[in-house]
Image (cartoon, rainbow, N blue to C red; front, side, top):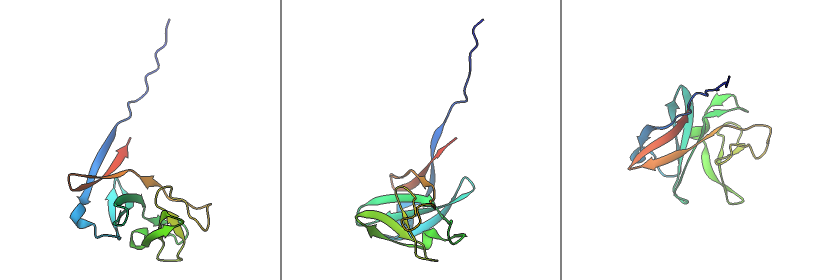
Length: 120
């Protein structure tokens, strides 16, 4: 007798959270995505969009969307407005204290709409 193991299908979808016009250049906004606060950044210099958790694990507050974006060693970062630690916008790792990190999310501009990728 053959046994078949059926795994649940993984679906991936994009959720529209705002328009490109809602994102001021070189600033962040916070969006509630599937019950979680996500900080979305529009880096004008590089033309890139980034999305990370809004929760600062060092300051214990949902505040990263209010941080200042920039670069350290040509790597995109956001400085927490609380204690000024820098979180890498691609990896989510804190540069000063690597034991801390935040989740990162896929983000895109789709026909003027900013979308976050959701996986389930």
